[in-house]
Length: 458
Image 1 (cartoon, rainbow, N blue to C red):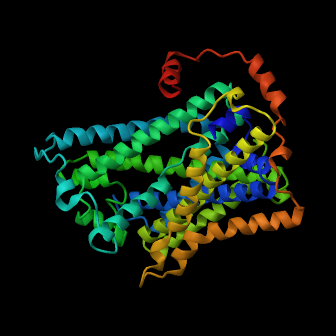
Image 2: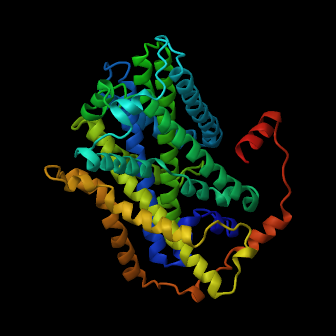
């Protein structure tokens, strides 16, 4: 994505690139898939907020918590949207500090810096072990456990799509965007790998509280496995602080998804690929009907009232994972078509503002891996005795809907699958290059912002 976006930094780039470099119908299918991906994350975060709140008390029923969170999302996105950017910056900083703090906690606690003075180190890697058995026993069971972690990682690893969405509004994007992509890749790798390592160090997978949280939907570990570790070590106060910060993070993430999903749908409507009434905005420029559509989809969070929280969370994880992997497949295939167009039209990749590593091999690897994992994600539903219609639908609905949307739009609009020499690589390019030539860098607003720029843009 970095190579294409720095060449042509436009809004909603990977969706629009799919239409420009492959087929308009392909872009429409990609756009709706991204919308579903964003919209499905809203009820996921709502259910997560409910689970975390019930860590402290069950006084407020689940339905009341869900309704309150949805109302707050609606009010914030309609009346307080002008503070969205600034608030999300500080909330994102809080999330970074939270994960750093938890990694530091792990290092201190594992070396004996805890109330029990238990220097447990990597004890749980030996007993019960680093690899949990899943569905089967022996080596097959351990492999299925690893595969399940791999599938879960497909849900959590996001970045290129979010970073690229800001390309059209970023200052000096041909300089800023490569840094942003590299920073996101590095920090996601560091935080996810170190975070996973920390969880494996702190909590054995056989811990009763952890098992109950995921098998029976009980509060506690579902809010944070770190809370289980702190409870095991008889640490007080800190679990409440961690849960509070996790709650803020979950609420913030859900609010962000409402914003992003509504703007994705709004973009489709502006291009004539969604009903025209969705383009109507309030006086403050808020696409009110798009927000209503997203919040209507978020009503799926009430499924928790008839099913366990862990079950509903897993349904949304399955749906989001499939959509996420389709997004990555679309990006990879679009880049391959972009490279073929550059070669056919004599545009050397060496002349581009940014050139990716290991291409086109990395793109083919990503396309193959993501495409295969899209179908593997819900494999457990096909195991003996595990057939479940909701699980199957949430796992594979995106896979069925994507080609249906593609074929529908292709037949309706009679779009054309573009050959490399037919791709328009020059559209909007003059405007971008003129902006780059005339850009004058603005100084930081204050010393604090200067240090934040150094810390987060390198």
